[in-house]
Structure formats: structure tokens, C-alpha cells
Length: 390
Image (cartoon, rainbow, N blue to C red):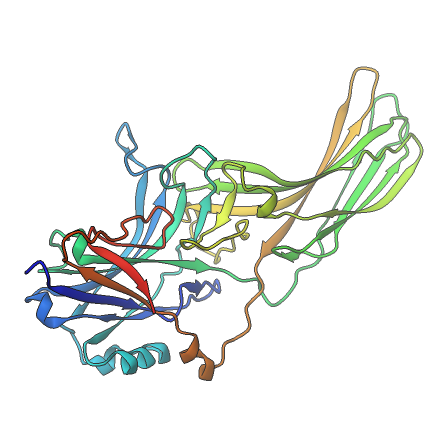
């Protein structure tokens, strides 16, 4: 191929986020635009992969790989194995094909029901390389066969996300209570904590109703509330990372024989935790912001061991009890769910105007160096590829 020859290859998709509804998952649909003459007899394939990272790719300890492919599916799109019309599964594909012409070919994947959602652990300020994460990737490449060695300059990659939204129905407001007896005290301490609801959206304030009846002879010196995020890496070692993402150190005291009824407010936000290493985040695309990871919702019967990183939340309430021999604690945990609300449905008439295309221009001109930086997981290519939006 001559140095001044150019090859245009495009991967076109109507969206990057694919919704897991627990009982079903949005299919992944798109179109690949090719130049048959420049392929010189090679075939074009598209893969959908789910990758779990538990460290940088160059890390390898006693034979344990820190990168594992949880899922890989490959489709040959050119030469097509069936009539192009039979390969069209969605209205988005049909609209893309009308726009792009005869050298565009559709691809279609369905997620299995046992894959995790996109999630990552926030790296520390000094960390380099890719963080611990579950990532999804669409890759288009040209080669003589599916198993042939693929050159970077013959490949384009596009990161996508698998996400979950909050269910339509709210659960019952969670409530936990406990009674604590003390030595040398005839009557106990009773504590009840109730949240105003079970399901919260990102950015929504949590109201915790705390009711303390202190019939004991002990003094409560302080009431401390926190929101704890629990991220469990279930794939390798079942390690759990518990991170406080909001705290209310009230300074409230309850003397012996007294009561306290109060509503405390908590607001877990990534904005207040951006320097905290190890906090779980929803998967993000390059140059886009994200938020604290949503609670994991799993289909019944699916093995949790293959789900990479499981995330849950709880409100912790601690009562600091004074005593002659030092302070002690009485604690309660109230679980809740943190997710995104379902977005409003996009009308079919508006969809064509809202399609965002990512086109990848392959240039063999000397001195043109493309973007090979996929550290943030959005778009990457070879030495001679530069992403271009239109």
C-alpha cells in the first residue's frame, strides 16, 4: 500500500449505554463502514468483549493474570455471511445503513444474562495505568481470518457501557432496631433507625430517622452516622472494600434516662470523594464524568462469582457510650439501594437527529500520528489512526 493512500473505516452506533433490566439486556447493534478495495481480500470482523482488570496488564504474580476476558463473541461482517437485509435487527441499524450507503454492513450482539455491569475502582492521585475495572469493548478489525494476528493499524476500538437503572417500584422503607443491655444497669438502651425510603437516586439526600430511648444508666456521648459503600471483588479473592462516602458527626448526646428523636441528612457524592482511592464508580467513557457506582442488581440463579465487582450501600449509625473503663459503641446497619432513574424514552422521530457517530480515519501519510491512548477507555486505535467526530 502506498504511503499516500488513505483508508476510511468507521464504527457507527446509535448509543454507548446498554441497559441491563435484570431479566433482559439491550442488544448491541451498529454498522461498520468499509472500503472493499483497500481491504485487498481481507475479511472484517467485529467482537464484543467483557474484560475484568485487577491490576495493570504488565503485572503478573506467580502466574496469576491480572486481566481476564469474561466474555468474547465474534461476528464476521464482511464478506457478509447472509443477505444484508437479514443482518438488520433494529431501526437504528436501518437508519445508519440508509445514511452510509452500500459499503456499510450491520453487526448485532446479545449479552448473556450473567455478565456484570460496567464499574471501576477509583485510582489514587499517584496511581498510573488502568484501574481495577469491568469494561466492555466493541472492536472491529480486518484480517485474513478470525484467528490471524491482527495489527493495531487494522483495528478500531470503541468502549461501551452496560448499565442498570432503578426499578419502577419502591421497596418498603428499611428499618433496623436493637436493644442493648449493660452490666450494672436494670434497664436497656433501645435504638431504632428508619430511612424515608429504600431506593435513592444519585444526588438525592438520604433522611435517616433515629429514635433513641436510653433507659440505661449510661450516657451517650455522641451519635455518628455514615454512608458506607461496600465493593466486593468476587472474581478472584472475594475481597471487600468498605469506604465511607459521607459522614455526619453530630455531637449529639443522650443522658441516662433521656430520649432523642431526630432526622439526620446524608448525601453521598463522588464530588466529595474524588481523591479517595478504591471507591467504586460507574464505568465511564473517555472525557466524560461519572458518579459513585450504582448498587448491583443480580438475576436470580446467576453465580455472583463471575460478576467481577459487586456494589452495595448501607447507612451506619454508631452511638458512642461513655463508661468508667472507657468508651464503647452500639452500632446499626441499614441497607439501601443507590441507582439512576430510568431516562425518558426517546421518540423514534427524534432518534435520527440524536445519533452521534464516531468515525475513524486511517491515514498512511508520513508524520501523521493518531491517538493510541485508551487509558480512559473510550476510543483507541493504532499508530496511524486519529478519531474524528461528525
